[in-house]
Image (cartoon, rainbow, N blue to C red; front, side, top):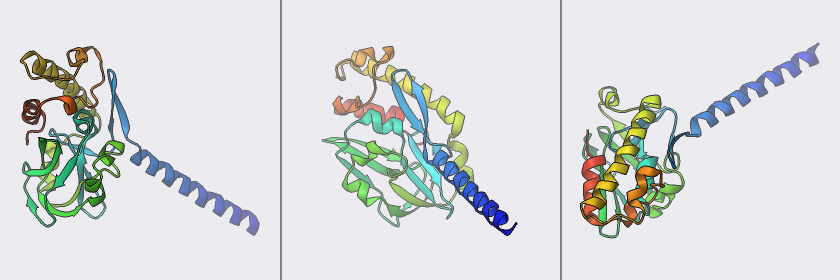
Length: 222
């Protein structure tokens, strides 16, 4: 009888651990949003800003911040990433992250207000890692939030984020078509983007004025 009780206890403990592992895997594995020829990832439980940054709240009450999958994909190769200095006080809408390729750069605004606690030095040293894993290892800063309860209402999550992303992708396809039509060179095949051609790396091959236009259209502070 004792032996059966011990075995049952062991099986119960193993079952609990399996459930925990599965729950952890579900959280870590981003949900895929399929948009025509492109596949963009949106992790469960992550808040997404209209300037294409994400926010993940930690158990310690801090906010981990990075660049979303859509932005890193359409930008393409990134030669340099800079983040606001440690200890700096950042207001929502202030520049938190800057990415550059040659003489072309984009300033990405902070999705929330707070103090910069940590910067991901390993990612800054190797910007290409952002493309490999934009959400887990690809975080850029940890911030101590100040107005999180009110500012979260401006961010999107779950189904709302997925619906918004689909609209953003459609809007980006129109944006690239317009850029090519008004004489701002776009990469080969850009005029076919509305037909489903992949978007990955499109901006990498565009000129500086197209980057400026992208900044105004897609990375504006809320």
